[in-house]
Length: 280
Image (cartoon, rainbow, N blue to C red; front, side, top):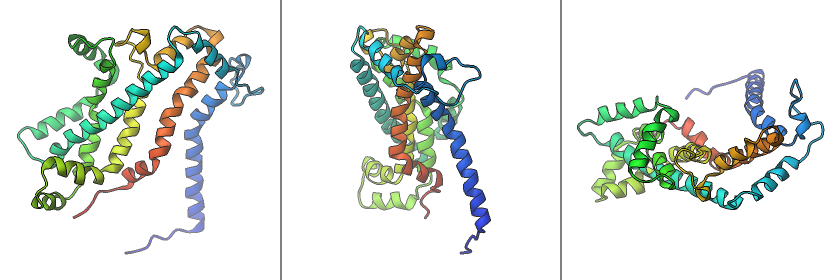
């Protein structure tokens, strides 16, 4: 195999470009944190400053104080979001993977048409589907229920598309060997297929958790005890200029779980992007 040679100048140029891209992509996160530690009088300076002259954690303290005066304990709201996000993520990964396996490795009448429909649904955004989703949830009598937020997450086609594309690369000989050994399809799926596509479902965990964590559920849940964290924080932030700092602190709070999830699974995400599949 021919070895790719690069000069030292080429390496420096590549690393410089990557560093600049990394800084550019990190700027929104850094700016959000800076906004959260600015006192209220610095939030409306024009032109806006990218640094805080007198950094303070008063915004986070005010957020705690305001949330402490809510009718429902703030801890309950956080647990609501954690519960919904975890269940939605786990369920979506399992259901998307199980639906992707027959599409990727079994030929049946209408499989191509079904996959084309799945690809077409990727073009529809969540707001477009909000009214049909509400009608379905209302017919099922699931309004004011966690399931009204969880079940639509299970049906997201993005995860199904991702898992199907990755499973298609698995060699047929691996599956045939498992069938010759007497393994049933369900055992092949969990013992052979799922371990091989681990990078893909780790990537899907990031996408699913981020989508679930950031959803408000405000159209489906009206009971104060069942409301999710983004809904409550948006209500707190909607009180005008006086709570501008609280809004900035709330934005940072909402960023933490998705970032932590990504940091935990980042090695598998990189593998998914660079992995070209297992060859025969």
